[in-house]
Amino acid sequence: MLRIKHLSCGGQLQRVFLARTFAQEPQAILLDEPTNHLDLRYQVELVESLKTWSEGGGRCVVRVFHDMNLALSFADTMLLLNRGKIQCCSKIDEFDLSLLDELYNMDVRGHMVASLQRWV
Picture 1 (cartoon, rainbow, N blue to C red):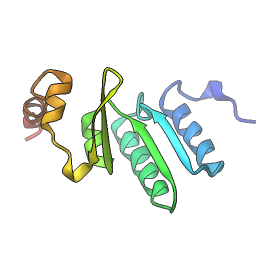
Picture 2 (cartoon, helix red, strand yellow):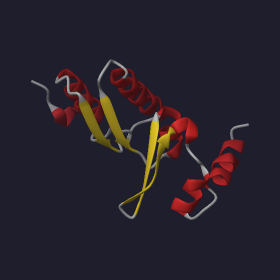
Picture 3 (cartoon, rainbow, N blue to C red):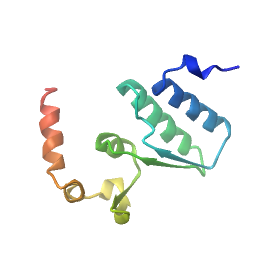
Picture 4 (spheres, rainbow, N blue to C red):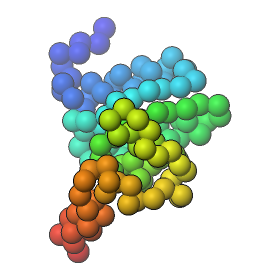
C-alpha cells in the first residue's frame, strides 16, 4: 500500500496523481497548474510526458498555466481568458504575443527578454 505521507506535498504527489491518471487511460485530462511545486527538470518532464501522451491518438490535455514560458514551449493551441471571457484562441504558431501585454497590463516580452539576459 502506498503511504502518501512519505511523499513531498508538492512535486512527488503530483507525479503520483499523474501516473494514476495515465493508468486509467482517459481520453482527456484537465489540469490546473500541473507543474506547481515541481523543480524545473520535473516541470519539463511532466509537460513533455503530457504532450507525448496526448499525441497517442484521440487524446486531449487541457492545461492551465500562469507560466508563459511553459505555455509557449509546449502548447499546440493557446486560449487566453480575461475576466472569464475568451480573449484569444489560436494555434501557437499564430499566437499574437502582444495579447499578453494587454492581459497582464505590462510589457511581458520585455520582461522575459530582460530576465533571459541574466543567463547570457
